[in-house]
Each structure stands twice: as C-alpha cells, then as structure tokens.
Amino acid sequence: MTDKKEYQKKLAEFNAKIEAEVKIEPKDWMPDDYRDQLVRQISQHAHSEIIGMQPEGNWLTRAPSIRSKMILLAKIQDEAGHGLYLYSAAETLGVRREQFLQWLHEGKAKYSSVFNYPTLNWVDIGAIGWLVDGAAILNQVSLQRTSYGPYSRAMVRICKEESFHQRQGFEIMYNMVNGTKAQQEMAQDSLNRWWWPSMMMFGPKDNESPNTKRTMDWKIKRESNDTLRQRFVDWTVEQAEFLGLKIPDPDLKWNDKNGHYDFGEIDWNEFYEVVKGNGPCNKERLQNHRKAHEEGRWVREALFEYSKNETEKN
Ligand code: BYC
Image (cartoon, rainbow, N blue to C red; front, side):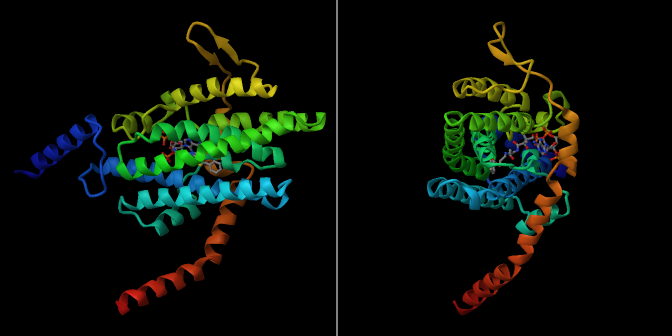
C-alpha cells in the first residue's frame, strides 16, 4: 500500500471511531492536527488550574474563620490536583511537563484570562467560586464527553470537585447578602467586577473562534463557546435574583421567543488585551509561577535522583 493510501485508511478508521463515540486512547493512531489541538487545549486548561490558585491563595491567611480557611485550602489543593491530572493527560500526547511549563514561562502558552484580575477582598473569593467555578463547570461537564480518553476521564473527576467549589462560593455570597448593608454592597461590587471576566472565560464568539469548528468536528469540544456562555447566563441570572443582586448588564432581559436571556456585548478589546498579557495581573501571575518553579527545583532534582537510585538498586 502506498503511504498516501495507508494514511487515508488510518484516517478513515480514526474518523469512524470519532463518529461512533469510541474514545481515542494514547497509543491509537491520530492525525497530527488532532494531537496538536489536544496539546494546545489541555495544556491551556492545566495552566488555568495552576495559575487559578493564585487569586484565591491571596486570601488564605485572611479567611474570616477557621472553617472558611479550611474549605478554601481544600479547594485550592483541588485546583492543584486538577492541574496535575490535566498535565498527565497532556503528557500522554508525547510532550513533557517541563516543556509545557517552559511554554507557560515564556508567555507562549495561554491560561484563562479570568485569573488576571485581582481579588480585592474576601467577597471576591465568593464571586470566584460562584461565577468562575460556575462557568468552569459548564465548560467541563461538556468536556467529560470529549473524544480523547485521558482528557475525558480527568474531566469526570474534576467535575465532581468543581460542584463543591461552586457551592463554597455561593455560600460566601449568600452570607454576605444576608449581612450588613456594607456587606451587601461589597457583594454587589464583587459581582460587578467579576461578571464580565467570567463571561469572557468561554472564549471569543463562535464566528471569531479559530479553533471551534475543527475541535467540534473531532468532538474534542462538544459545545461551542456561545452555547456554553448562553447557558451560563440563563443559569446565573436566577441565582443572582435569589441573592438579591443585580447583574451589571443593562441589556440583560428575558427573550420569550427563544426562551433565553439576551445579554449585552462583551468588551472584546479588553478580552484580547488580557489574553495578550496586558491584564491587571498577568505579569505578577507569571512572575510568581516562575519564582515558585525555580524555588522547587531542588525538590524535583532530589526526587529524580532518589527514583534513579531506587531503580538502579532493583
Ligand atoms: N482566556 O478558538 P478559541 C478553574 C484563546 S480553571 C485565555 O475559541 P478554544 C479554576 C484560545 O486558547 C479551568 N485565552 O479557542 C481554577 C485560543 O488561543 P490559541 C478553566 C483564551 O480552545 C482555579 C484563542 O483564544 N477552564 O476552573 O477552541 C480557581 C482563540 O479561542 C480564552 C478552562 O481552562 C480565555 N478565556 O476555546 C477557580 C477551559 N478563550 O490556543 C476555578 C479549557 C479563548 O489558539 N479550555 N482563548 O493560541 C477550553 O475549554 C477552551 O480552550 C476555551 C477556548 C473554551 C477556553
């Protein structure tokens, strides 16, 4: 068989598996572009989990009670675990973790724009749990059905923990809106600041998203950016009403014709500026990560030597 025919046969088998919802596993043949898209998306996802620990970590020492501190600590540790599942899933595609981190440190790899905004007070921890984890769950529930086996299995585990995270955030918001007038105002202020960055988490509009068509054809992504964003709006409006808070969007209104909420235009200029590295905290987030990575070098080297010695002994 010629090389071209051989390739076409493999591609047809691959496409048939995708069509039949059979998961693609690391040792299966896959087109280079499928592999590249997975490496890109999973590493972006892993970096988001890891960098996402920083805005919350900022409030660990100032949590208002031992209970809230323990819960926040557990949540941040979960995020680290999610990052590790995802780096492991991405490594099955043949790229080493050191390489992913190098791309992150060089500013070549992306992570979610939302983590480049500052957490100014304790309520922001509530808003992150409620809105950021809320948005993340919608995206991740959908990714449980992704076509790549290791990514899909990582998502199943992650989703179980994310729903606890969302409730942790909602509880903080609930306590604040049931507190003093000043606390209620803080809750509204926090929603005002986190609403639009959370909406941006879903990525550009479908007609401006260069990757969506390709990744949806391959069932890497199962639902589009706009579909998930709309679900987030429909889901969150009722929760905001329950809390007695107002979503900061004058164009938000129920649309009887399509059974969804209409909403205003996202500031796409702000989105692309943050993605390019010009958000309020981009530099600080990357610098912190580089520093922590460097400080942990001796631990990695010691572990490597230890496991090498153990292997040689056996
Ligand atoms: N921020 O063609 P598109 C968590 C990039 S952490 C930055 O639509 P795609 C948590 C995109 O990468 C979990 N960049 O891309 C942790 C692409 O650039 P490249 C958060 C963005 O991949 C701690 C370009 O724009 N969840 O839950 O089809 C505390 C064009 O976009 C963003 C994830 O990370 C953005 N918002 O779709 C609390 C989800 N949006 O790569 C909570 C995993 C887009 O071509 N990722 N870009 O250079 C995904 O599901 C998809 O990658 C996206 C974008 C929906 C985000």
